[in-house]
Length: 110
Image (cartoon, rainbow, N blue to C red; front, side):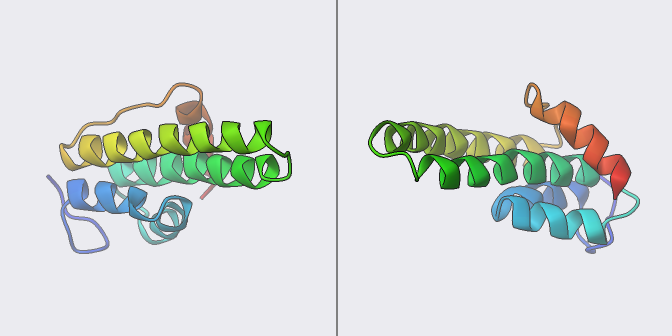
């Protein structure tokens, strides 16, 4: 495992990318310029949890059905959050379908 700009190993930095969702994802995209492992996890966290955040806000305006969908989405996001932190900590790159393609594009932009 190599070091990162944060001064921690890349698996710890990858885990940190998911801790506060898109917030830590954005922070690590700005801070970490070299390590591609960390940058990928930061970009994926930003795209995935940013989209979940926005969808939950929109669904919150739709009575009953929207609230139910938002609840299910939040449970799926919780499972993904735990899985992605586990995978990053173990040094794996787990590509969430569809999300990872957008993450690749975001990673290049920063």
